[in-house]
Image 1 (cartoon, rainbow, N blue to C red):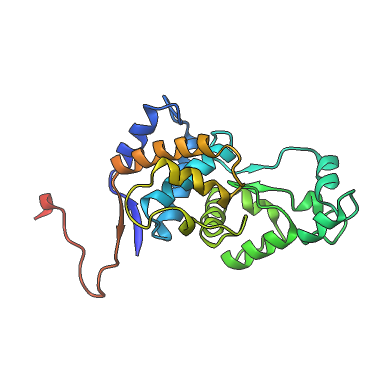
Image 2 (cartoon, rainbow, N blue to C red; image 1 turned 60 degrees about the horizontal axis):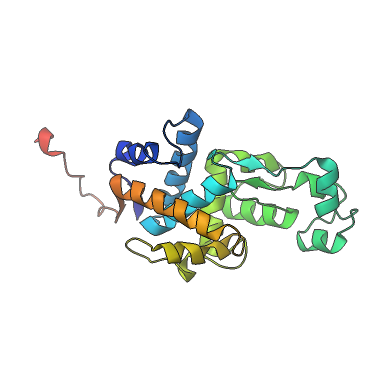
Length: 227
């Protein structure tokens, strides 16, 4: 199964009329949205999941819709995550066992993939050498794939999308609020839920459709004006 927007222009038109990405859309914002839509489409996600992924990315990237690097210089990252810093127990949890890992494996992406262990897990899942090249997590397509796999499989907190969101049809505001524990407890849960509702309305206008694959050998139907 796959999923996609049947009317992408209508999706972006709704966003232009809201405080979320409106009134104008930059090329980067469109690129970021499309990367997430493509990853969600490949995974055949239902509309509520897609809306929450977009709302989460919007919040975590400060509205840019592009993957970002964790804020803070090398001294801060060593202090927070390095085995030679003041929090070696935290470094061990993250798999940062080599000096310098705290800086090398700082947070990157649509959500902050952090620590050698998490880069290894994501790279293995996606068949990408993220340990050898952590900056790959800043590529929109790879960051979107990490977002989708991580939210579906509970990489970030152990909670996943199935815990709160419906497998078909629209989610409620309350369901989106409850879903924040997938990423970060209850931090800004109501704000992100409101943004997810806007993205859900845009996806509805753009006709997000989950479609089963056609049987082998069966041609795709032609548009009516081609007949």
